[in-house]
Image (cartoon, rainbow, N blue to C red):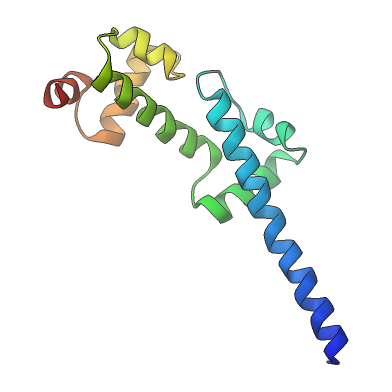
Length: 125
């Protein structure tokens, strides 16, 4: 390979790796802004002008989880802040964190944190 061809190849390779990272950053920004709303893969993909399949592939490659897995974890983290720093009801926290019901919120929280909402709130208070 000539030196010019080598440089051109490296530039193209760098572009290919930068684009997915930028897409992932844009998807992250979208998820952070809209986490309290109902968010789908189609919503995330449309927000960054890519297909749903490419959205999942790019995000998983760079963030090491799907956008929906990340969103659930992010919602749980936001809920943990509310549990620690507010007296809001579990239902209010669930809705503010983007969960459709308090029952679903309780289930996901226990799976991800390893304790019930009540246990978490008592240990943090």
